[in-house]
Length: 467
RNA sequence: GGAGGGAUGGCCGAGCGGACGAAGGCGGCGGUCUUGAAAACCGCUGGGCGAAACGCCCCGGGGGUUCGAAUCCCUCUCCCUCCGCCA
Image (tube, rainbow, N blue to C red):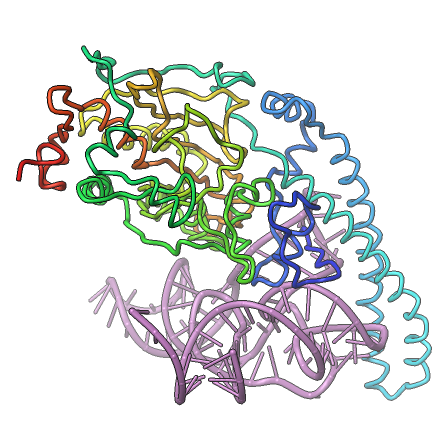
């Protein structure tokens, strides 16, 4: 329905990090094999209850107002009425002309053709106008966030989050814990100066037993979820095209956060969620195959523009990190139950490692745009004396499904409906490594005890081991 | 990177610019027949917008020519074959 306006230069790549006109991204998408997409929020739903939707969106961003959108929608529908009437006329005339020609009544046919010229021009003009309006609607709509679920605490501050439960007690260390970065360097597990030489600040370099610990974490997470019923392992491409980025809602709003390879029009994935979300793009799934559960492993890349400071030193925030990601495609009826089980699956990894964590429910203002409800898992980092997120589990309801035209057929003959998509880290490695290094450090010799569950993978009980 | 070929409904596969949203086949669903099944025969069998229409749109995407485009032109993407390069 929403047609893409290709703009004057179809080859134009969105100016990276320029924060330019939103339409640019859409123009770029025009030469991919894509069908016109439904808007991210249901316009019909907005039309039916504009105040209600607006009130709930304002809990995420008070600046949001739907009035311009409704006006555009009104214009759009008026144009459609007019242009469709004209097209109906044109279609009938075409039939007549064809018949007249077949019957050899050439003069009458010519008269009809003359008469239709003006109508053809009028259609062309109205179509162009309609296209412009729909483009505008698409731009506005694609910038709006998802409608938050009723169970989400209302609040614009991070501090409005609610602690739902916790596992074990916060570890009490009877010594002053070293920061994981110092520990990592002293033990020869990490080498950030050389990583900076190779790539730049905030890139990791794991060395020796540090590299082995990193691989052990990845493999442990991977095996853990692969062997759990229902999660199908996937190793996706690490790069996504503009359409993929748009579907997951990485574009157009968050283009400053992702790396892009401009000459090839590809983006490095900031999370496997972005990639796996497009796995079933433009497909109609059957009801029986839902829910579909995937576990993906990728390295993730983020520009992290503006991030800096002591709070984020070391492994806390990096441009590149490894993550095992859980992703589900579900029916609308089950998605919130599936979110609960998704969180539990992510928690199970931390329980297997026997690491203290807490589950928090994010407030409206702190969720990613695509999410309707998000739980974070947080672990305790002793040197910082605070919790850090190691997993974020979200139900994006039909938000991404609309952008990517991902549907299912509820019953054999029924109309296709949008699926719900969910994602959650299961888990990201760096902060967990920070947590492990700091929590299990041994003051007497400065070494780190490897958690039981990881020993088979690391092939060591203590890092570095005796040799 | 170079040279060719291709993209049509769940699949295969036709399609002179006007009767084509699209022949035919396969598959699927329903029915007749049968004790049951198979075979045979009959019917149905894509998607979007819309409250709905005997309404409008969709033949890989976008644009153009035309009174009218699956069909002609431009362009992009993807797939296949060959050559080159490379882990």
